[in-house]
Length: 438
Image (cartoon, rainbow, N blue to C red; front, side, top):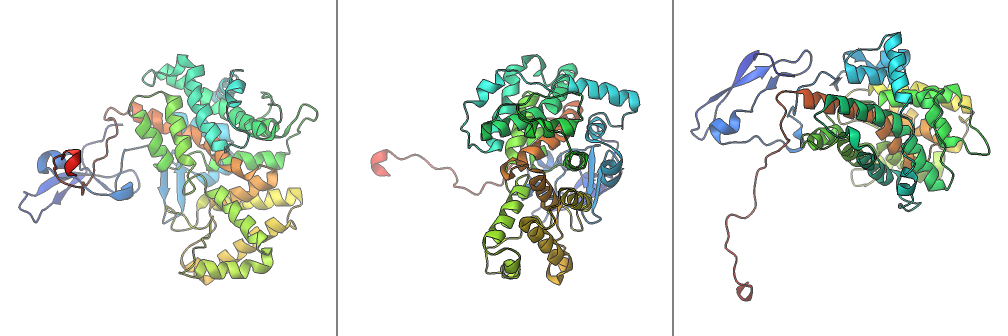
């Protein structure tokens, strides 16, 4: 959306003789003020330098707001705590896509549209067979999502709102089907077709765990847990994968390609792969002696000369407690209780590590609280999701956020193809010498 008239100005002065420059100052509805530097290069010949874009707003948005100091996360103004306890995932999808929570008839219509697109083209099965059985699910998902543009050429025009709408519904509907297909392929089991009378999360779990010889009856506690995982991961402002989707779509590429780029970015262990890294950390501790050796592990974490890292604790944005972690912690204990797993060695280890992190002054003073990845990884493992599939489920949940962000960017009259600049520190102009004189 276009910016309103400036709320003030910031004056930038220079020590090299360049004349001072007044820059517009804008206030968001909440959050920090923003200095508009778009005229900087044209008027001064200078760029700003901001590695990682930690002090740069790449867009204006109405979708998600995070206050890391307060531990606050809002979707379209609604606190995540209320959405996770009072709404389901598809209601949350509707909110992110259209800006408001649906009423009963709107929800029914949206549910009908999504469930009518849950199947994928049968040729997807042959496409899957080109992958190795032991390929990482995120490698498979990057290929499958990108391939949708080849199967559904009728909805690849990014600048046609009707086609964008169809591609959005298709992506939301087909992601659970494709994630479950990737899993079934990896374990050599037949694919399970969706059942549209089930809930979104219940249908996904049945496609994951049913076989032709034995159906899967979704456990409501586990279905609710999976639905909450989807809600808590649906969007998270301008993170790396969301920025990737926006940057990719800014070139005018099709929605499926842009979402595939987001999937690829999410794969990184510093982003969506964090919950996978967390479970692998717990496995390493268990292999070295389990709960009895947890003290030695904590000592290594505290040792500045050690390379041992504590995964699943702290967050780059949240300097206080991750609000999603509080909700996921409740779900974690509900699931362990429902499945009778509190005495399982791995989960006892996880709870022991949680207790230390919440009580030890070393972690408390540094605000290294358990984050959403810590608990969601434990929950998924308890449900029976294999660790390599964790990030694919994250991608499934985040797809709607990526689509909402993409739609917002395309509708912005000020949007342009992304083109970051650089501070060049390489060689100056040089002439090529003949090879005999090099």
